[in-house]
Amino acid sequence: MDSFDDSQKPVFEEAVSEVRENQATAVRSLEDSQNAPSTESADSFARVNRVTGAQSIKHGLRIGTIGLILPDEVPTEVQLTPTLCVLPGSPQWVRGVTTVRGIAAPIFRVDPFFDHYTYERGKRTTIVFQLGDSMAGFEIDEVPGRVTLSEDEKLNNFPPLPASIQPFARACYRNSEGLWLDWDIAGFFSAVADLSKHS
Picture 1 (cartoon, rainbow, N blue to C red):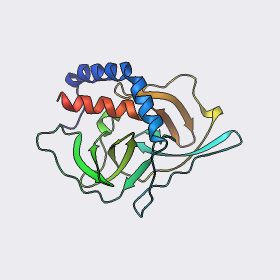
Picture 2 (cartoon, rainbow, N blue to C red; picture 1 turned 90 degrees about the vertical axis):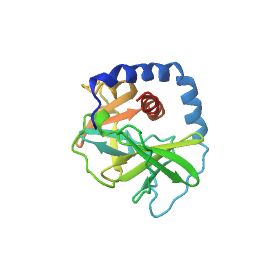
Picture 3 (cartoon, one colour; picture 1 turned 180 degrees about the horizontal axis):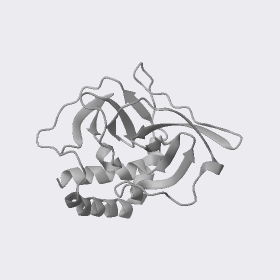
Picture 4 (cartoon, helix red, strand yellow; picture 1 turned 45 degrees about the vertical axis):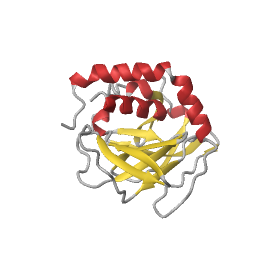
């Protein structure tokens, strides 16, 4: 079963609570990752973030109708043709493990958490994030692109979001391309990992 059903929500909410209690640890991990070296290859995604006047140019990707802004402080890499080692008995959203520069990175299918069920089947591109000394990633259907945002496009109130994503939304923007979230990626991955352990 690919969906995030009601029976899993209490476990996920408990995992979210644990993440919030350990938020300071997650923040330290993000701060440590700022000094981590980033390498470029044919399959790597080189991010460009800059501020021009009142606008900021970042990179982002979309999962269904929700756009995710890639965090400035986290080294990010795209693998166009990843090799995944499948883990027997793992939940449907755990796609397997890949290796990035000698570091094992679990890869998740996060589409159901975003209420997105029309994603591509079969082998997909992955995006991997370096979080301190660890790596984790998820499958995507399109390579991230540049996103131009301004403070005028920042929403004062969040629109309705999937319950499994709401706790990790730090800010929300809406431009001509749609909705974009500034999100707590470390907290999100921690919650998904905890959910996987309990499933």
